[in-house]
Length: 489
Image (cartoon, rainbow, N blue to C red):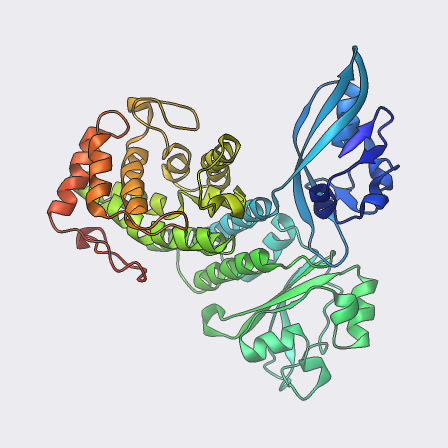
């Protein structure tokens, strides 16, 4: 978008109007706070005029990079944008500003869902007997979601066909006994909570004002300022239950958010009724990484398929290389886990670039390279053990310093990242990609052998070749499992 020296919008391209959810005539001639879409900070509060990117550029005369804002629009979920602004200076005078928008909604949601997942795992591992972990779950959804209301319903023990409120947090005056039923024949049983508990299928109502089954629910949602909800069935300690989460905004629960919340509920389900143990800690970590893979699959068809391969074929090869290299069992497992999620940063790369059949332009390649830093930023916020986040950052570095993102060399690159780098190249070359057919194992091994000592760690390459000479094989690409030495299972 283009703004004049007074901060008034004078022009916008099609992409910006689509991201902002407004027609060009709704933007031109207005300052940002008078435009039809609501713009908020990450904490949900309104963004004052002085903090808008255009105002900053005009006030300071300096570029503004990476301002994160949320933009609300009709009949859609909130979009999260990274905003850059640049002052237009002519003969020493500021004549206006150019503002550029980058849609980072999926990345933003993934990061916040991952933080929430990490908090739920902490609750699962360290919850005391003082407060039920399911109450902790509701509290975490309000504090870290942040959602307006979370409550857990269970079939009533003394009122047949009714649903009792077992735990709640947030706007706890909204749910009340008798407002949901298990019976499909009753109107109160055809809402999201009753339907989810009865069918075992997650229910989403993204506009309570128009999609609620009863007038009572619509009026009550309006009274308490609730716009959308999701009801997720689960079975803590083997007992049927449903978690209902409400947000003050409409269209909050899109596919990414729904799948992320379902993964989080699965973690909570696991934790209830289990004791505190190292095996529980390890299982919780595996659940976190599995949930990350599930969330990544929502990004696009190519990323989904690639993540499935990396999470089984590539990481299994990396683990086998680590065994051949002589690493201990714990490090072997961490390397395999690192391989499961090392490419998660590709959720920030546009679909068109990931699947482009031809050669990438210099700008497109720069966007691809961002996935290493984005992956590190996502994983480092989840309290995951070393070296999972570091592998995401370094797996495209090369021993001669020619890699990215930082061009570090030799021993500056951690060994797990050097192992993943070799496994990643072999896996990628032996699998089909949208822009080329599979090249075969012989060419893949020749590629890493030719780069031994320059691009790749020579000892890692030697271990990789030895693994295949010893009989390692990838499973059929349609399978989710690969042949892995049994000592790491």
